[in-house]
Length: 317
Image: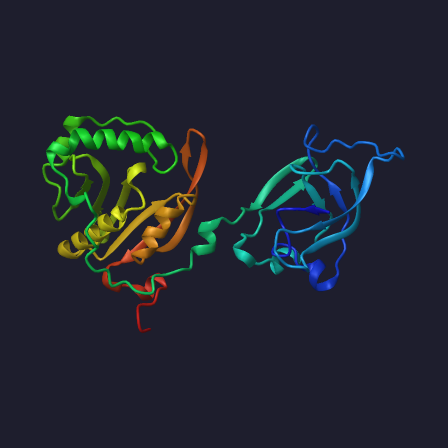
């Protein structure tokens, strides 16, 4: 028996219609498959190919003859799965639909990208946007930044950037002097610079929220937030976000927008907690040193304003 990382979620036709397919190993030369002769000199064996789902019906093919050494790391091809396969695919068991790739004359071109966790969650909205005052966090103070925070903030930000995958920045160019100047006016009608500091005065979290300057988008602000690796999971992000929304209400901002990488699932969960919904995706928008990243665009209307535009629904609807 061979178990593959697909299954009835991306190809339900064998289960529904007893559809049969020609199955072959499609691994490149030098991959995991190394056929070995059995006692009778044969190099193949009969397999049943099953999917990843905990269902007795998740069988993709039976009595398939494949190289005896077929195993982990190999790629199996199901020939001519048909025009209806993708349209019948689902996200059963929260498994995203696979990519669609066209192959011709030795060349491959993607037509549809593989779905990720962010795609599965994109229609979720907050069921309760009434964000009260967060509970105090022992040993942590959340407040507007101060000039004396500049040195600690620079060390904090450098560590965030060195993690490599959560923010656009890959090289820190700011100086203590520049951040000290920026933190002189941390709470204005244009922007807020908010920090979380521990008992030693060390910056362990930071959020900026900035109003757009164009006359037709002055009701919108953009936001970014980061938490030290050793301070995550303590509610600091929640406390910072609550302050950002308080600033928005004070200065008359109606909408907050942001972008986030799809793999940053903890950040996406935090934003959804405050009613942010997905408005789109910018494909390969960030060209990082390790490759291109999509960016998910998310936004929230303050106090539920504009829900009819965002497609959300507030409590009691």
